[in-house]
Length: 588
Image 1 (cartoon, one colour):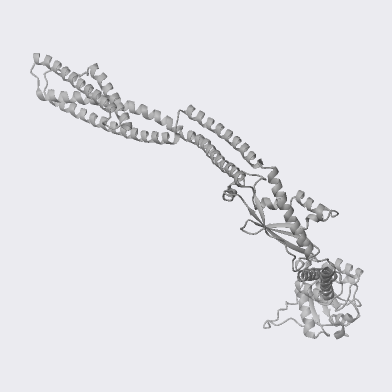
Image 2 (cartoon, rainbow, N blue to C red):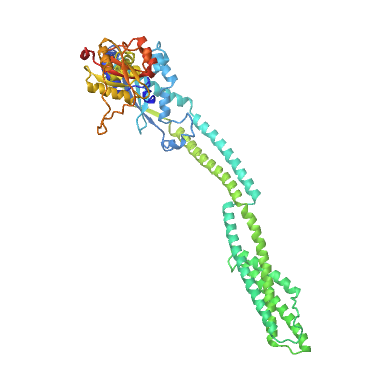
């Protein structure tokens, strides 16, 4: 229950705000009238100000307009575009010359406010505005300004004919030095890594590595096939009848081993040449001839070795021809396998070397990409500067920036200030805003109670009822039920009906003498709680204030709280259970 009574003083209800502003309408109306009067005073007493307009065409030399967008970041204050001409129009040296001729006694800060210049959208045209107290004077001042500007620009470019060219020439030299430094860095990097074109060489190395991998797999397959063939030949050889020791081992002559190594090297050399030359090239044909010669020598050595061995055997015993054929095939297979294994070993060595090189490729490419990106950015900037330099040289030959007076100033038909509609509108809006603030402040200071929202704002207590006449028994019973709903009879048992004013005395006595209705039957649907405790309503004449547990305020409309009463009631807010608002005329 206590939490439900915790109203805050800083809460403002919207209905109270609306009612308060209605009561304080005189402040709002007064503020509005004051604002309108202020606007009228501005219109009547502000001296008129006229603003004349002249238009200037900024004509650039041939070849200059197309490159202005790319030169905006390269050329600093010397960029002869429309924005630059606007800055020249509003520059202090030019305006100071005009002030000395037109109004030497006027301070420069005030004199500068007379002038403004804007660019006509999407055109190289400048609109120049100058203001004065009469239309003729404003037109005269505008024309003087424009004429002084045209003479000032021509004199400026005549006295500084090569400033832009010299500036661009210095920038070109600096950019070329930067490019030379970057080029030296790239050259040193390529020399250190022994590269010419890293991207292409690494791509070519990847292709070679893939081809080498295929060769390794092919050689491995051939070695495995020969190993199976040798195993089959040995098994078949054991089945054939022989007249010499079966466990005899066959030895390959060392000359054959040397020829196998040579054949493997020639095969690798041939593959390397085929990557760069056609099969009909002289280099490839030379290696092919050496390869054929080595194979023929190997065949002769194998044939001689077999003939000598079996010739010796034939002197002792008769040789089995099937055994001799199998033995010859076995010998050739072992020789070929040895040659393939030698080739495979060489290929694996090359594969390991290429893998080590390719592992370093990402870091190498990243470092090279940084250098190349810096160099390409420098080249792009250098190209733009070359274009700017050529355009500046062309400007010296063709002509300089030539602003042309497109439309001279004429006396304006109406004043630019003050503007009656705008002044009245702003004055009315300002007055209305001030009136609202004043009305709100007056409503906050007002301590008179006109409605329930005023009472809740001042005391922070709920209003239980509003009576325009003496309450009936039903109305009193509703208040009684409200008191019980707020804890009467359970949490507290005595409430003092405290009248504020003589008109509220009758209502307080009527409530004190009211006999509450008995508890409703179970079949009734009234929302009143059961009477589970004693609840007494007293008046100040019947009981002392200290005997009461709670206070019930009875406030007549129009009652104005004084400072002492308001502070006392605010201190006793925790004991005030609510308030009843009455109309004094109806009660009296």
